[in-house]
Length: 215
Image (cartoon, rainbow, N blue to C red; front, side, top):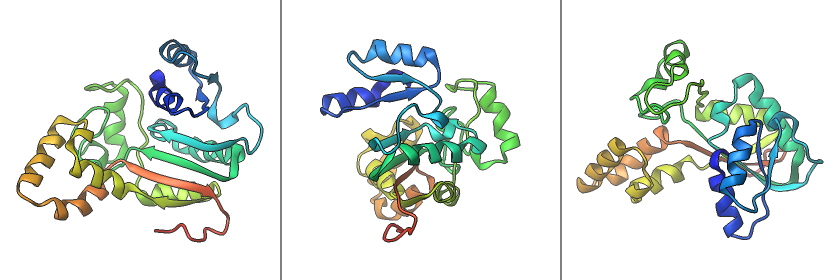
């Protein structure tokens, strides 16, 4: 929820939204930045709302900052407050991104956790001093299914969008690489690779049968 950027966009679209964070300073900052926004101070593993109240829940760059042992309780709580016809949107760091998005160090999270965790905790580069918990497609699907969600993988959309329009790429080095790929007319060959190394994007729903959602 940091800075309430997504919240501001939803308000402009006329969408009634609630931002949730367990850090008082972030709730305070978001309220100051987004006038008229609705923000709550709470732990997402104990959401202070009744069951089946939300049509959409957005975890945008959030799950990577939740320890793996708390990921399932968090998702189970989201399932509780989500309507039966609702959707859960998850955007989370990919373990195999070319550059770790917080430090911009190449291939950092490709290494064993014991190697990259101290780097993250030290606040190297532009990172804050906190650990990061990236996912593989397989790992993200498993934790979502264990929590009772049926998921569809839309990571391909991230890859396609960024190769099609480099303005969506925040990393300067990657932006130059993609521009070179486009100049060499290799975009079609790059799409499958981009899907493997892009931020993971899942859209999930409450469906114990898992019917019709596997890609």
